Amino acid sequence: MSDIVLVHGLWNRGWMMARLAQRLRKYGHQVRVFSYPTRADSLDGHAQHLHDFIREQDTAECHLVGHSMGGLVILKMLSRYDDVPPGKVVLMGTPVKGSNVVKRLERLPGHGLLFGRSRENLLKGFQYSPAGRETGMIRGTREFGFGQIAGKQHEPNDGSVCVSETELEGLHDAVELEVSHSEMLISAEVAERVEQFLLSGKFEKGA
Figure 1: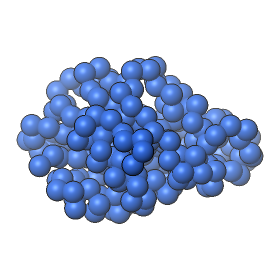
Figure 2 (figure 1 turned 60 degrees about the vertical axis):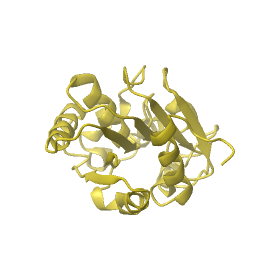
Figure 3 (figure 1 turned 30 degrees about the horizontal axis):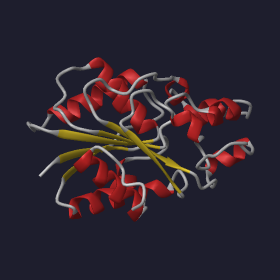
């Protein structure tokens, strides 16, 4: 049985990962959800708390699954700490090149309240996948979601994050699914693809 830690994204808390957690438990995994105040701390702060959360349990293997900004927290943690148990990483709609939607929403009044300290977090970029860890990316292509209030994006996207913003050197595999950014959290197909990657290190494109 594998230990999986789920990390949610901006404006969410741990309960938003309940459906995905339930499906992964049905596959036989032990699943824990890391809940954190997304707008209240820096990426470094979130990464430290995630590290502490993981180290609370003595496990030989720990897979990490992050949605949106949660993936950035995972990447930051793995870049800072070398004592995290081995395991695979699955990123779901994570803007590893920085979020264009955030940049565009900064034009709106009150954007400081909207993003808090998460603004800087969502503009940070990562160049490489974590060393020594098989990492997969799930990308959504159904353009529906909150990000549309920033205006139409003229390239494939999931309503909040563009496919191009999820490009990361060193990925072991990636798959595009017809789901929106938020639908990733409740999609049975997404849960199946997470399971595929955790078992084999790749996504079955024809599944």
